[in-house]
Image 1 (tube, rainbow, N blue to C red):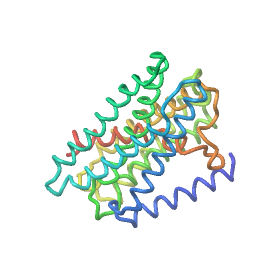
Image 2: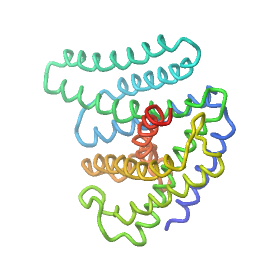
Image 3: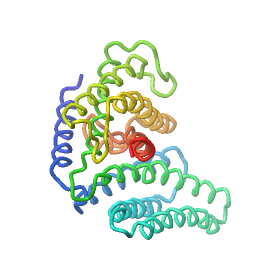
Image 4: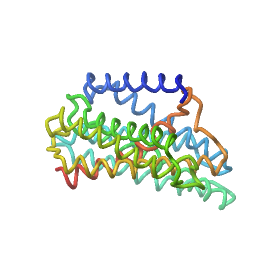
Length: 286
């Protein structure tokens, strides 16, 4: 195991946990960090498309994506203030305008095929990063703007320690390939390790939280269910990004952090687990 990579990962994790526990979720600095991560992740994804020869409007797509994430932030802030209908209308208007404008831009291309390819590449980037990331923003603020983002902390602990469990067990005992064409190093034994580590996180959370997840009651059954769902869905998110990178023959989306790749490499499983947790909260916990 790369000790330097492990130390860097632990330092980053400790900083994130400290900030999530101390800073109110509605603090403007939190929005700036969330926008920064979304912007860099979107930029990296459009870079992958470019490496694969698929055109996309990188600057325009990233700008629209950041506007949508900001609109999601405003929507969540207003959800308890009586102005929810207006905020919700603004949120979906931004998304609708983004989709319509993407296709309207096709008319500016003399080559219709080139315009269509650009539109599809831009939409793919918008859906893959900003749209999925907007669910993490929802999770971030779901407990209220004046409290620390403990539900987001729970999501990150489950997701990243599940990833760590998969790597730890899979690298030592992995024999049965999970997806040999997309990610040869992933194994079913590693998946079991992900489930075990995620279960440990949930058991610890249930013990220390007194059976609460933010404002919601969170019993043993919910912890067990999410201990199975998070590894499955998070691994799917990891495989999807691996598929994109393998298709364009790129190892990491970026080399920003030693041993950890770019922002997209760090949040690939979070992008899929955030919608899962939000849907679970809305339709089951609440």
